[in-house]
Each structure stands twice: as C-alpha cells, then as structure tokens.
Length: 217
Ligand SMILES: Nc1ncnc2c1ncn2[C@@H]1O[C@H](COP(=O)(O)OP(=O)(O)O)[C@@H](O)[C@H]1O
Ligand SMILES: [Mg+2]
Image (cartoon, rainbow, N blue to C red; front, side, top):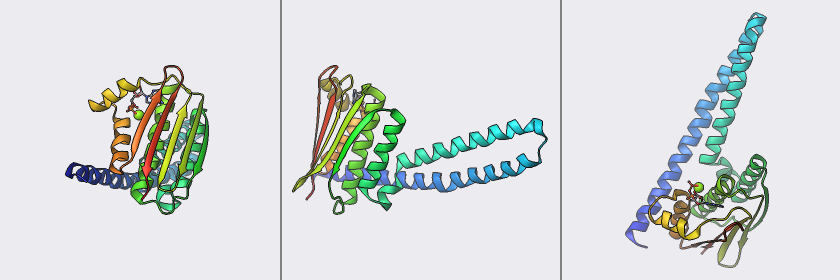
C-alpha cells in the first residue's frame, strides 16, 4: 500500500476517533447540563404565579428539543451502538430511524454475520449506508429504497437502489475529481482504502443504484 494511502487511512481513523470524542462529550456533558437545567425549571414551575407558568413551560419544551437535537447529533457523529451492539444492530436502528423521519419506504436485507469484521470495515460500511441514505433523503425524491448487504465467501456486496430523480453520473464523478462532491468522495476513499470498489449507475428519472464491493479477507 502506498504512502498516500497510509496517510489517508491514518487521517480517517483520526477523524473517527475525534468524532467519537465529540459525540461522547456532547452527549455526556452538554446533555447532563441540559437535564439539570430542566429539573431546576420543573421545581421553579411549582413555585411561580400562574401568569409566569407559560414561560417556564416554553423553556422546558425548548430544553427537551435541545436534548433531542444533541442526541441526534452525537448519534450521527458516532453511533455508540456500533461499538456496543455491533454493525447489524447499529444499521437496523439507523435505517429504521431514517425511515421514520423521511417517510420513505426503505426495504432492507442485512445478510451477513459481521462478527469477524474489523472495526475499520464496520465503520466504513456504516458510513456508506449513512451517506447514501442521507443523499437519497436530501436529493433523490425517491419513494422507495432497496438496501441489500450480502456477505459472500470473500467479499461483502452492498446495493442501494432508489427510485428517485436519478443522478448525472459523469457530472458527479467530475465533481468528485474536483473535490466538490464530498459525500461521495468520502465513500470512494474509504472503500478504496479497503481495496474495494464503488459503482454508481443511474438513468435520469429512473433512480440510482450504488454498488460497493468490499473484500473481507
Ligand atoms: N440518490 C441520489 N439521487 C439523486 N441525486 C443524488 C443522489 N445521491 C447523490 N446525488 C447528487 O450527487 C451530488 C453529490 O453528492 P454528495 O457528494 O453526497 O454531496 P452532497 O450530498 O453534500 O451534495 C448531490 O449534490 C446530488 O446532486
Ligand atoms: Mg451527501
């Protein structure tokens, strides 16, 4: 493996470590503080004259919202599920959450064991799904998504198919070259570091298919 690839691998690991740290601090520190403020407000609420109560109630619901936002941000930065329960549960949780949020019909098959995957592999697979689904929700106007991850003898095959507006494949590769399509560039770099391949197929108006093959051994 070349020197540049060593550096990329190092940088991606460093970025993942940093994300993990920020996620934990956000969740543990800021989350705790907000919860403490909320408890204080609940106590105050009982002592206040009735005309002030709506203000406290509004503040409490703003805090609830912030607590939820912080949980979402830290889960997206680094799902602790990935470390605690493993790739499959983390993916299931993530997909269900996106499904619920977007209203898109996401059908998925997670046909792999995963216990033997290196943590580099698990993170890359999770990031691929995360970026692809985010793209679908943000850009595609799709109604349906089929997501299939299948483990064969020596490799993992990931297919993510949507029925949205489609993508100008050559245009996107050009953007990747120029360092503009950062999401797809991120997928490509991570996949190549694991000696895998990324293919994008699309026809205008007929949706998009992302195919990733990752060698496992
Ligand atoms: N599933 C999709 N359907 C339609 N267009 C897509 C899809 N995925 C990506 N794109 C297009 O490819 C571009 C590049 O994607 P990406 O690199 O993730 O950048 P970003 O999401 O930040 O715009 C997007 O701006 C969008 O135009
Ligand atoms: Mg994107």
